[in-house]
Length: 176
Image (cartoon, rainbow, N blue to C red; front, side):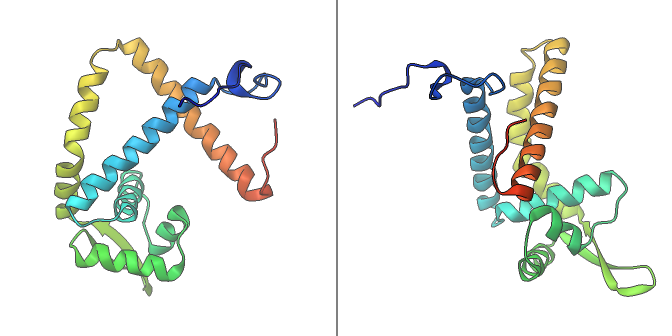
């Protein structure tokens, strides 16, 4: 049995608001996010790594590439984890050989996290198949089309960050 659809544009009562995104495009973005998460779960699962482990390695890699120091506090903040969960995460990554802890400067209590060569090898093995398939799919597009999509995706990330910040501050959505 098929589910009834709302005949109004966008399925919104009274029609789609002027500033609302086209629903088919939003659904495609949601589908992409869901499939990317499924891939991370599958690739990580084959290597006994949780999605949070892989997200942590991505945070460490991004900060390291930008020349920034990564501490457990950075992971806690970026991944929105409790202190005990962060400790468990760092312990897992250390035990698996993916990160090393190094004391930072003169304050021996402060710990810096760095990825090991094993982390880079494992990450490459897990994500190279995805990168290859994405590269093959992107090859069908011109440089101008890819530039447009890059700008679009950058804007979508920024819009999502802004919506998250708004939701965090107020707890309720607002129209802008």
